Image 1 (tube, rainbow, N blue to C red):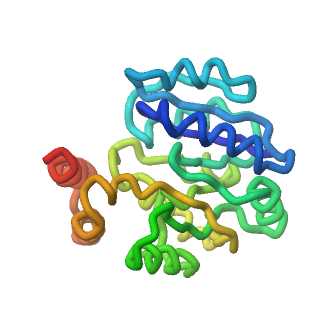
Image 2 (image 1 turned 90 degrees about the horizontal axis):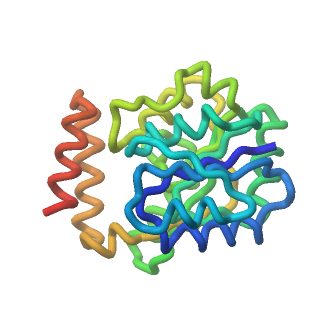
Length: 228
């Protein structure tokens, strides 16, 4: 069985869509849906608390902090970390369980954006490739809880790039797989900043990390760009 962990911050628009989608597309392998709220000031908390299939966990802000908090409260042997603006494919839960039964202890789905743009379509095609440079948090992440605990969970020093950081450690375990079905994620940051500005920002973050930038330096650069 699977524990779904959704880190959320001011997601009153996206969260109801996701929760409804999970009910409609799952195949009975979900034991719990944990919404970890990082101090939202909208109706995110109320939506999670009132949903009959979801449980609510309050946490400090930051995806790494929130996802670790969700993992600590999870009861299942498989953790599935899912962004609030990403919609997994039909029968996603049984696909994950089958992958784990086949010996893959961690992995993700192929990803496509909900925006039709040639560059974003191309980026989606790259997610079919099982290589660390083609990974990202919007593709979601499943991992056996025992392996997650073994590697120490998410590094809470990272306020951005936290998904890539833990995926890099999972790749070293040689257990990572790509499920050949499509998760659909929102292109809202691309809409807000522009496709090319957003892509350039991600390239900058990637190369800064490759050159040894600290977690705080990555966050400072990201925040400066997205808040300008």
